[in-house]
Structure formats: structure tokens, C-alpha cells
Image (tube, rainbow, N blue to C red; front, side, top):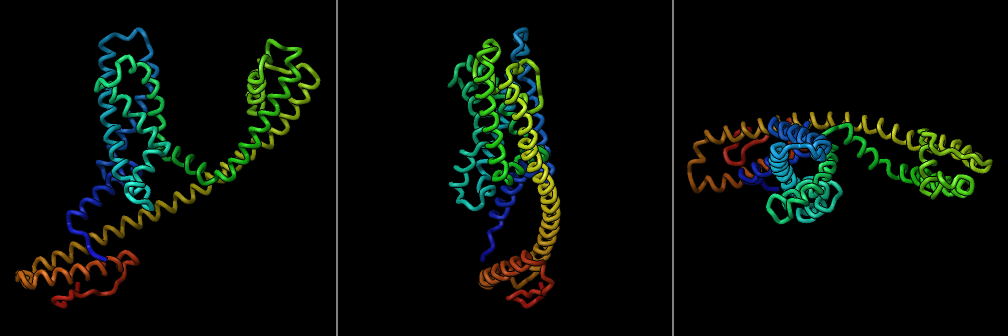
Amino acid sequence: MSLHPPENIAYITRKEKVYAALNEPSRATLAGKIFSWVLTVLIVLNALLVFVVFNSRLTSNIHHVLYYFDVACTFVFLVEYIGRIWTADIAYSHLSPIKARIRYLISPMGIIDFLAVVPFIGVMLGTLPYQTFNTLRVLRVIRLIKITRYISGLNMISRVISSRREEIIPAVAVLAVLVMAASVLMYQFENPVQPDKFDSIFSGMWWAITTITSTGYGDLTPITAEGRLVGMITMLFSICIVAIPAGIFTAGFIDEAHAERERKAALNAEKKRRKEEKSYLKHVHAKHANDTSFAQPTANKACFQEERSSLASTHKDFQEEGSDETHYCPHCGKPL
């Protein structure tokens, strides 16, 4: 194991800071947290502006203000997009840097980040006609999906779905079968007597979903004996089937809450370890800065190589368990 040169250490630290600002704001520096909050505010404003930009009574001045606001948002989102591509090898540390970046680019959130930036840049650079900009306004809603990264509660939902997908998928599949069966049967029994209401299987599906979810708008109701029998069976089955995903999500949220507390405890321990390690390395460099034997060029090179090996070994020991063992300089024999 060898120590990285000082400039490489700064590079890695800088990349980690950017990664923390984009993915784990709680670990980020003050500047990273501010950037994270700016992103969150811009994402929310973009979503709210969907209701504004389709107002035909807006004046040309307001349209110009909205255009420059889009320019500013696109620039910020572009910086975020580039930052995520740059730090993809940290997010996917088990992959090579190139494969990690490709993995991010084709991931669902990577595609959303792409749609949040690139089409707007095309309009602003003139490669896409300005009339396209009106169509791209709908993409503001897509930008709202980006906020899931910065709200811990929404993040938790995605983690629960990911961790419990083997249980959720079968439950959702059974629910889908119930919806399809109820839709077809209800259309089959009710269409002959209510052709104006149950005019297609889609109408039957509408009735099935509103019934299973206990919404019950009342716009579609069965009047035949067979249709009512299907309705009763559907309601009874829905009580059990809908409760299964609810129980899975509840258990998943409880497990995720415990895991989140453990992650925060581990994060605090890591911060403390890094702080102690940084203080220790500063102490070592300060000692050798005052060592006159390092002034000799010939001895300096050999000592520096030995010191790098010693510091690498010390760094590894410190990472493993903050050992209290005393280490000595291989050149001068002084305790470090």
C-alpha cells in the first residue's frame, strides 16, 4: 500500500465532498448543504411553475422572466448532472469508472436528470425550435421526481420498495389479477343491460379499481344479480389482498428506520475517526517539518520513501481500529 501524493488526496476529498452534497446532504460541507437546498427549492419552483406557464394571459415580460429563470435552473441542473457523472464511480464503487458512469447514465434517475437538462439546452442553443419549448414545459413535472433524492422520507420509500421488492411484486401481481378478473366479469354481466355505462372493459376496470381501493364514486354500479355477486366477491377479496402490501410496507418502514439509525451512528463514528486521523497526520508532518535531517537531499529522498511506507502502514492500522500502539519513524527512531 502506498500513500497518494498530496494533490491526489485533495482530488479524492473534493470528489467525496461533491458526492456527499449530491447524494448525502447530511454528510456534506456547509457549501454542499447550501447547494442541496438550492436544488430542492429550484425543483419545487419548477413543478409549481407548471400551473403558471400554461396561463394564456401571461404578458410577454413575464414570459421573458420565466425564460431566464429556466436558463438559471438549467445551468444549475447541468452542474448537478456533470457532478453526478463525475462521482458515479463512488456511487457504484464495485464497477470501473467508465462502467460506473454508463450505469448512472442508463439508470432511471440518470435518464430523469438527462431529460431535466438536455432538451432545455437544445432550445437555448437554437438546435431545437423555440416552439418546442412549450411542449418541454411538461418536463418540469419530471424535474419534480428529482426531489426524492433530497427528502429523506421519499428516499426511504424508494429504499423500502427496493429491499422488499421480492414480497411486493407477488402481492401487486395478485392485485392486478383481481382487477383484471373483476373488470372482465363486470363488463360481461353489465354491458347487456347498461351499455351506456359499461361500454368497454376499461369501464369495468374503472369500477374494479374504485371498488378495491374503497373509493366508491358511485358513477358505476352493478344492477344484475351476477354483477352484484362479482362486486361482493371483489370487495371481500380486496380486503385481504390490499392489506398484504400495506403490511409489507409497514414492516419495511420499521426495518428501514432501524437501519437509518444504524447508518447515522456509523456515520458519526466515521466522522470522528477521520477527524482523529487528520489530526494525527498533521501531527506527524509537523514533527518532520522541524526535523533538520530532512534538509540533506540524498537522505531526504530515502527517508521520504521509508516514511511513506511507514505512514501507509500506520494509516491502515488507524483505519482498522484506531490502535493505541506507538509507531516510530524508520529514519530517526523518534515516536510518531
